[in-house]
Length: 92
Image (cartoon, rainbow, N blue to C red):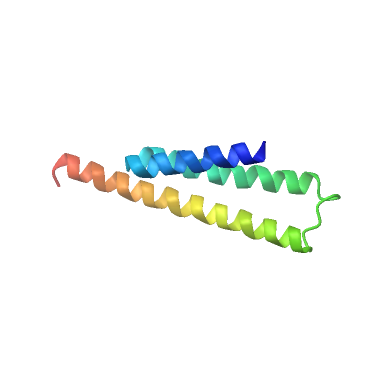
């Protein structure tokens, strides 16, 4: 099930980038941020069975950090691209 979820995320990322649509990219990256937030909530909720200071725990934390960074940078870039598009449309 996780593989299908990640395949869907990857497919949507490729399609959004190919379409060069800042709105789709922003929505996709917002989903990445929400995914990380929900994963952190799950880690806190089940902290008794999750060992952060293990090889797997550190690897997972790094993966979440990369996903969060990707989401934040993507949202920022999409907002910047949208503002440039609106300026170009208004003739400035």
